[in-house]
Length: 238
Ligand code: HEC
Image (cartoon, rainbow, N blue to C red):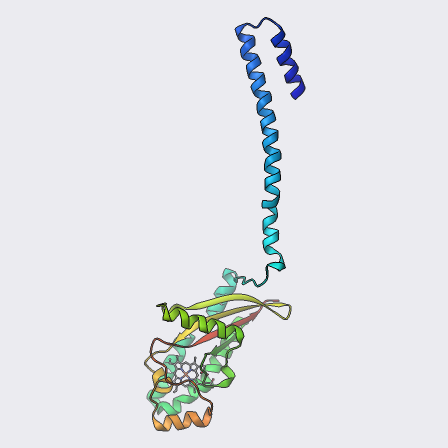
């Protein structure tokens, strides 16, 4: 096509050019130049595009190291739902128990009812719900490495002015070849009823009862607004 256009141009030029022939030659030449420019541009573009097209592959390669993929909307919604209202529910039950039988009797609420509700929620949502903290009362609630890192991050964010009632973190981690969704939501310390059992001054009887049940208790001396702990949700994805 390029040749025939060229031929037309030469033949036309060998004749005495009138006005119409001249404009025909110019338009043919322009088309030839455009076609040449176009193919040159295409060649240049593809040589530039190749590395660009490969970039996602390079980014996704495992050699990039630690990644922190985030769960999709449905996974996150399920994790959130599994602990929805748990804090309020516990608080409500603790208040009622303290009112009814005093703080010593209420210890059993945090001790038995909290894990029971967590168990029930776990079944309902196909996840594992627990509570953890940097300073624990029950050593069975001690954080694993992931939880510790997130709790420390919550503490840092609260120190920087974040609203503790809104702090959450979700991440998909790999665990022994499988993928696991991890979700945590901060539990802020509140004056009431939390201070009765986690504050700076516990009544001597309550102190004795807690020491009897939890000889290694670390969970006192918290001030309202501080991070008391977190709900921690784990879901095996495959
Ligand atoms: C009547 C006493 C009592 C009150 C009031 C109370 N707790 Fe607890 N809390 C406990 C006991 C006992 C445990 C240990 C439970 C267990 O064995 O798992 C505990 C455990 C926890 C844990 C799990 C981590 C750990 O330390 O083992 C968190 C988080 C927690 N409490 C937060 C709160 C918050 C927030 C409030 C206020 C809404 C509160 N508690 C009020 C007695 C109390």
